[in-house]
Amino acid sequence: MTHPRVHALHHPDKPAVIMTDGSATLTYGELEDRANRGARLLRARGIENGDTVAYWLGNGPGIFEVYWAAQRCGLYITPIATALTGEEASYIVANSGAKLVVVAPEMAGLSGLDVAPNVEVLTFKEWREECARHRPEPIGDESPGFHMVYSSGTTGRPKGVRLTLPDGGVTDLHMLAAKARDGYGIGPNDIYLSPAPLYHTAPLAFTTTCHRLGSTVVQMPKFEPEAALAAIERYGATITQMVPTMFVRMLKLPEQLRGRYDLSSLRTVIHAAAPCPVPVKRQMIEWLGPIIHEYYGGSEGNGSTAISSEEWLEKPGSVGRANWGTLHICNDDGDELSAGEQGIVYFEGGWDFQYLGDDDKTRDSRNPKHPTWSALGDVGYLDEDGYLFLTDRRSYMIISGGVNIYPQEIENLLIMHPEVADAAVIGVPHPEFGEEVKAVVQPVELDAAGPALAEELIALCRQNLSPIKCPRSVDFDPALPRLDNGKLYKRLIKDRYWQGRSTRISG
Image 1 (spheres, helix red, strand yellow):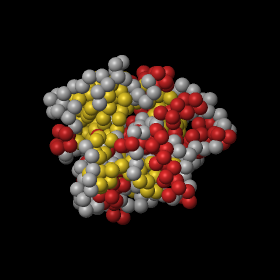
Image 2 (cartoon, one colour):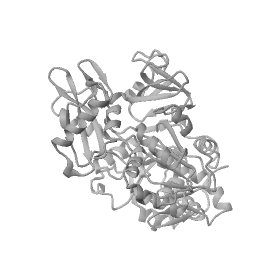
Image 3 (cartoon, one colour):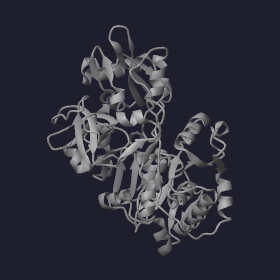
Image 4 (cartoon, helix red, strand yellow):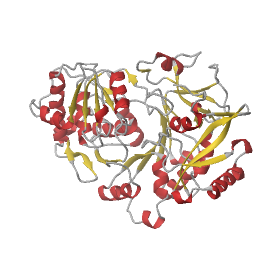
């Protein structure tokens, strides 16, 4: 059995959550007490197995109090991103069918939250006050629930990923916990640094998995590169998960500053969620040693790959071999391709998922000839040893004069320039070729933006890429719309250039 209840029984005073800003610490005993009271609150509100609850909260122990209360009630648990507007949050509440939403008053979009009359909205303070009125013993009809997370909506409306709820008891070993224990050795002696927002799938899945396995979660309110290094040293963090943009920000700290912190407690650094430029990952391995582990997968849980540092140094740029399900690379017609041929990446054998309320998107994710094979929308190829190399998102492809161009390679080159903080490459309208390549760059210093830097970046691309891939122009932006999970809202960037025109991306 792996569950915070078990750890509360044996080690009630052990910290389950520590906030790095010193605002709160939550022990396993306190977590169990509050989760049981929360479960009784939910039942008293008429919320039954298979229903959905949502939370709109910033990083903090409150998220785990709500999560573990709902998990033992057999519910779907839906996080709402803190930066969403009231309209966007209202869409998720309605689409998910949530019967109750726990909110923080400081959410900027809260005044615009508009929910149906049968949906209850409680502030976290009200949630706590109502929980205190209930007994701390478990409810009598427990069953395991699980999260239902919404996609980032980088190319359209967010999609709710709905999976079948687990069978068995609430304290039974969950598959994700088994994979983390067996794949990364996570256990009760670990200190897990969580630098990312808990409304994203991976941070939520890893932190709650750490609770199942008895680890202590050290949670940052938000990521700051030097603060992350300081937290590793202060708390003796043994494991963390980051995204490539966090790597880039840490690497751009002065080397003398990075060297001030003792990071020797770290034995595992996991990354995923977005492509990592080869030079960035190589520098991370040189800095921290061969403790960098990468995986590829999605909220859909349809399969995954994994790769160690040692493997990656032999196969730079790969995201690894399948460790859950079977990989297939297929053309647009659904036919499987040979090693080295580029196509849509499908998994066979993972979880069966649905996009809630969107049968068309669910159907589009399936292989037309093998309906049990599903895709996340990525393009790539397998080498002769079965290692997967990703090319880009299918929806990000630029077609210029009939030639397919994938922006990831260009972005990976631009981000390595010392004056570039972030970069997005998109297709913009061209009267003859349909689209031409444009780079939109976030400079490290806004004062550096201008024709000279634009020419320097275009020259860099011409030195390293074929002419068809090189941006014809560079625009500058003080802040690209990149989420804390590392994903870029290219939809918002493209909209600036395609307003009033038809684009190939829909939804």
